[in-house]
Amino acid sequence: MKTMADNNQNDLVSKITALCKRRGIIFQNSEIYGGIQGFYDYGPVGSLMKNNWKNCWWTENVIRRLDVVGIDGSIITHPKVWEASGHVSNFGDLLVECKQCHKRFRPDLIGNVNRCPECQGEFTQPRKYNILFHTEIGVIEGEKIPAYLRGEACQTIYLDFKNVIESSRVKIPFGIAQIGKAFRNEITPKNFLYRTREFEQWDIQYFVHPSQMDQWYEYWKQQRVDWYGHYFNQKDSLRLRQHASDELAFYAKKAFDIEYHAPWGWAEMEGIHWRSDYDLSQHSKFSGQDLSYQDPLTNEKYIPWIVETSGGVDRSFFFLLLDAYQEQVLPSQEVRTWLKINPKISAYQLAVFPLAANKPELVKIAQDLYQRLSSRFSVDYDDSSNIGKKYRRQDEIGTPWCLVVDYQTLNDQTVTVRDRDTMEQTRISMDQINSYLLNKLEKL
Ligand code: ATP
Image (tube, rainbow, N blue to C red; front, side, top):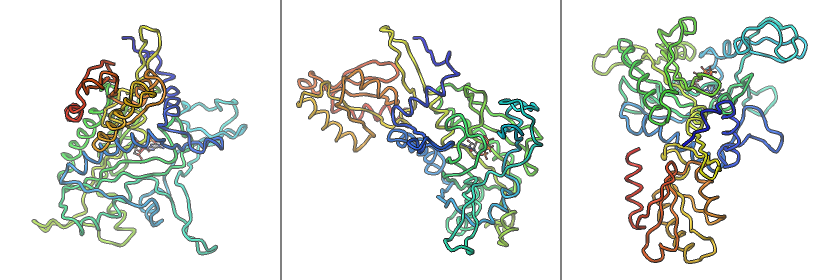
């Protein structure tokens, strides 16, 4: 089998972008108006996939853990939150502007050259641009309150820390998890979902006693890289990168990024941050509330320290697509494209087709099968064009198994099951489909 994807790393992003549009995974937002940079929509297939991806994270980190609880916080908060967090005074990139064409560039991304790469014009001195999105609360002129769309989702967790402690039975060490939208007025949105202006983050803020910070930091670092490793085909495309001392926040003893080897180089997917007591102390100071924790056994009172794991849902989903994309030249010279993605993330775990759309007896069995299986699995049904086209569509959206009702089904109640990755077809009895699939899914 010849895999072409490896040879074509450079145009892989365009191939994925085209596939996403063609198959209803992701669309450019406002496309009929010419699009708007840095905003995307998930289509009928993509919204199922993204929900599955989030569900994998939530199940692992909240449902299956006694020491982590979840919240779902609001996007707009009290504006003081962003003063306390430092985002109002310091959230953005250093940029230079070309005095001739007025385009702005991040010096670090254009190799610190001193002339405009587009027109050779002279640059201004570097200036900081704040990337928080501004909005206003209220409708009456003169009474509107300026506010921000949250620049990172995690701040809401700090805001709810006291409420969570008082309303649940959590005891340190414990974590609060959240999946939610964040907004950044990025100067250079690029590489499809990699850098957008509206995106989702998944965060865990894990609260610990300062004396246990090191051990919990190491625990989460490993836990998160292992978790991603479970879903990516190419394990060596993931790595942990330690931040150099000049990249560290003043309160951080160390920091690591989980990176993916993207077609344009190693790129951050999630940060594992040592936040010490910085966030809770800042919010205590700015709100005037006591955000310390009292240990119920020892009565010791302290501001907990935090290990943060903060990843991008859309960014990691994009990396998953890059990792899953496969091409194969068939003996017919046709190129087969498929997504080799974990079936837990696929939009549909299986698709059901009648072999021919104009045979009512086959259509009836296929529709009944769809009805029965869709109460247990996510199932697609397709009685449109020819069988080859139906397989191509399911391959391209990563459906792991396709069931075909054919003439033999009428005689012996068996159907063919085609495997996405091997294209092997086997026959199984219709009453064994449930156990066949459950058995496969259990092993993932
Ligand atoms: P970068 O250096 O790439 O701008 P960051 O270090 O500012 O990222 P964090 O503030 O640590 O990112 O946010 C946590 C995660 O949120 C990142 O690891 C990334 O996966 C995701 N993320 C951040 N900015 C964006 C963006 N503009 N578009 C999509 N995802 C993003």
